[in-house]
Amino acid sequence: MEERYEGTQFGNEPFFRIIYKNLFLIIIVTVICAGIALGIGFCFVKPVYTASRTVILRASVENVSSGSATDSQNKNDVSLAKKLLPNVTADLANERVEEYANETYAGEGKIDRKNVETKYTAESFVFVIKYSDTDDSSVNAKLDAIINGFNNYLDVDNADYEVIMAKNLRLVSLQNRPSDLTKKYNIALYVVLGAALGVAASIAFVFIRYSLDNTVKSRETLESLTGAAVISFIDKE
View 1 (cartoon, rainbow, N blue to C red):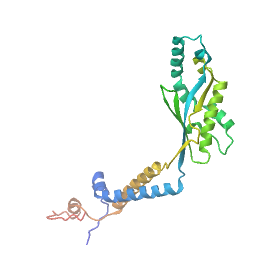
View 2 (view 1 turned 60 degrees about the vertical axis):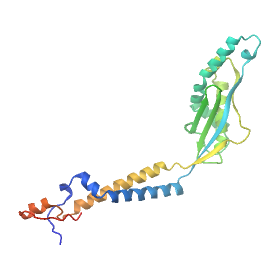
View 3 (view 1 turned 30 degrees about the horizontal axis):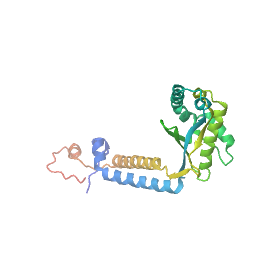
View 4 (view 1 turned 45 degrees about the vertical axis):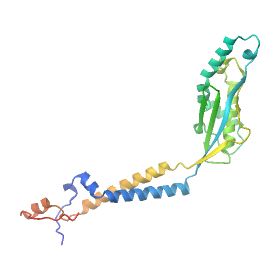
């Protein structure tokens, strides 16, 4: 029969020892909670669809194409144009482009500039523009609206780009077909939250159990209660 006393074993054991003794339980609960969160993610979280289109920054450069332009002028104009490529990446996701894109977009919902991602190849003026949305039926149209919105932005707010002496500067698609579309489930956050909940719940359970347990589990506790020396002791845990 286990001896009981007024008090608990919680305060008599180091934190790390309690965790170590119940490590298997904590791991099992964490894995189960992460698995449940994964299942919830697949069942209830909408996948994110990303449309991508390859475009090129192209313009009718009258000064460059004219016979009066020198080779040094042409090289200088190209050099200036390349310096503006990072501007295109930033401007594709600015508020004005978002506004112009929504003006040209006739589908359901609104275009969010935060969903725009752009990459470019510095030496070729080629861009890959991506737009992500949970609605696969509209994501292609929203991406095209972003491109149209940027071109409208160039027509109105082209001061920074005029340095390349270009007219009719445009992002022109290199694809004569719908944008490439990929599908992704963003459920990593659910798994992390589920695992964190499992760790917290299992540790809380362990410490509650220890705080309510008043059985004698150590030689020192038994000696202090009886005042007698303990010759032998079997640790059940």
